[in-house]
Image (cartoon, helix red, strand yellow):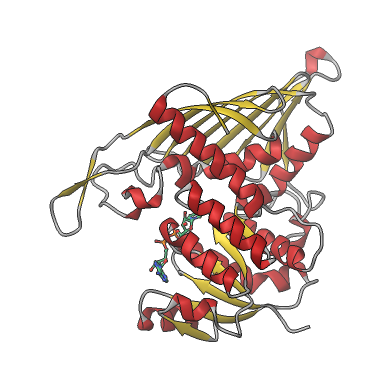
Length: 370
Ligand SMILES: NC(=O)c1ccc[n+]([C@@H]2O[C@H](COP(=O)([O-])OP(=O)(O)OC[C@H]3O[C@@H](n4cnc5c(N)ncnc54)[C@H](O)[C@@H]3O)[C@@H](O)[C@H]2O)c1
């Protein structure tokens, strides 16, 4: 069987992350054929050619439509801005390619639905970039919850904070334009919803508020432009299981660099995790002597699959880019028809429905069904 031919669109923050994953997946896991890095696309020919040399791709183009229809390309990594995900993913699927699209799936529910329709019609693998669920620490937390280590879950709280938009003088970028979506709720918060999906289950109802800490941002060329998105969002949740939840999202949170603080409360204990300390979880259970009860810190180690594929030593830690390598392996598993741990367009659409229900709640008030 010929090796999978990879096409990559966009080579910024996430484009480099995908390129590193495609380069590393075979040496790290040792059980898959090394993908062929066939072609890469950027906004102009010179940039595309330079990035192809740096990232190890055989060819380059400034025309993403040429990439998605190229015969050497079997799978398209979409790491361009949110507003173009739908158009690119649908074109790639219609050309008979598998798709690995960054989150958020799309910037409107209608676009996300069209993407799922295209994936079903093509019969190709269509997956989303929800890397945080791949963390061995999160997998451990999910397994413990599934095994009943903290009893039935009754409440969950996620605080997701970063400060990449915290500077009021940071220039207006695509993240502040309405075409990128709602703001913190989807550009950022969808990661929280992916974690809720694997840790707690389906969200049934949501009530939301959103806020704009800075109503305008300066333009590179001078002057200012009104901000069209919301950098802060707060959501109350009701799960199908009967559990309740709270998600607080802020991309203007000075000092917070990559915080995703998760607390899952059950009838017999609590599990907590913070992405800023991504190689550990804390577990509290009511078992044993009451005078010795307290949170136990568990560092990830080779016993926490697939940590062992990277490092044989416990407690040495994985990093953000390594989550993408794990996600890439899960994607290759899916393509090979093996069971895999991945958020596909089907589950991704459910996340988009949660986003849409939250946005409706903000506009109209009150609880909204997902
Ligand atoms: N999974 C994660 O943890 C994570 C983290 C950050 C960003 N993202 C997502 O990744 C995507 C990209 O975000 P980013 O932070 O890498 O942005 P970025 O601005 O760093 O990179 C985007 C790149 O796409 C290129 N591009 C734009 N339009 C293009 C086109 N028509 N054809 C070819 N190239 C084009 C740009 O030149 C740029 O290099 C977004 O959807 C974002 O939400 C995901």
